[in-house]
Length: 370
Image 1 (cartoon, rainbow, N blue to C red):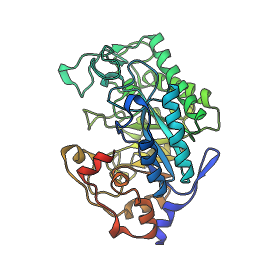
Image 2 (tube, one colour; image 1 turned 90 degrees about the horizontal axis):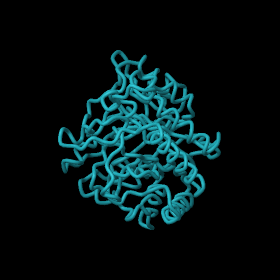
Image 3 (tube, one colour; image 1 turned 90 degrees about the vertical axis):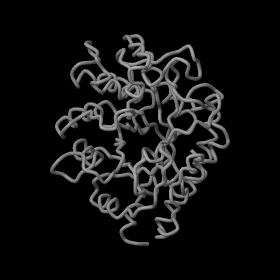
Image 4 (cartoon, helix red, strand yellow; image 1 turned 135 degrees about the vertical axis):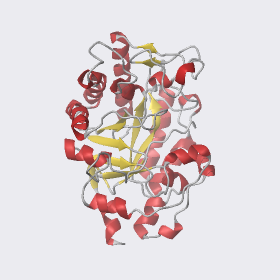
């Protein structure tokens, strides 16, 4: 095995368990769970990626128990005996393949519009009655959450985390990225509140820190809590939460203190610097600021970002020398792989063996397996 790739296959402590390598399967929405119930096909899908060498699986977003949490057809939920039974099978099969697995807890917030599943009569919820950028001027504004509504959502995330632990998951990830509900509270364009949950960044952080604290209390101190965040948003790929390292520190330190163990810094291309005068990407800056382990993500192993997939474009395999050099410098700790694992479930094994010429390209047809 090439000395360079060895760094990708070092073990990493993850709560009470140890990951045998640094490769994570990135969360990707699938819409393959009719009625919100993960099926045996879902279990097979994740087991294949575990068998291929991904040491940690982060599931597709799974919605918490709140009327407005869902915004897409056939996405799984993390509540209800039927859904939890399905997740138990998923967990067992991934564990049998030798990998750890965590669910991504999700609430879409103002992305939701009336008419969407599972209850078409329910509209969106958000920090403010501001239409989501994906809907433009034609979107119906969400209902602004009051204090009671905020408390209900936080309780739903905490219960979802407790449910995840009860069926054997190895941790949880909170979806705080890409313009969904938690991110909507963080982002000044969607959070126009004037109370203690809006205005300054400190106040916009309150919802996220209270939610993280409730999740931590629900699962205990040893259960890993991962927090995914991003600068870019659906509908605004140039969107920014912060503009410099000082603002990033003001964002991250309260989240870490609230109970985040690992930060998952979502970018479209991992190799691009986040700020001027530094080669560090978002995950690198996050690790430097917080001292917490970080996951990098963004077109790993491919030559173009994910937007092309939505336009029917494929992506060819690309070398990961730059990724390995950054990992060897401990700029980040774990590497999330998305489309490359969709196209080729054996991607980790082929990388470990140095069989780079055998890695399959990503094609639009591969999206059918999502």
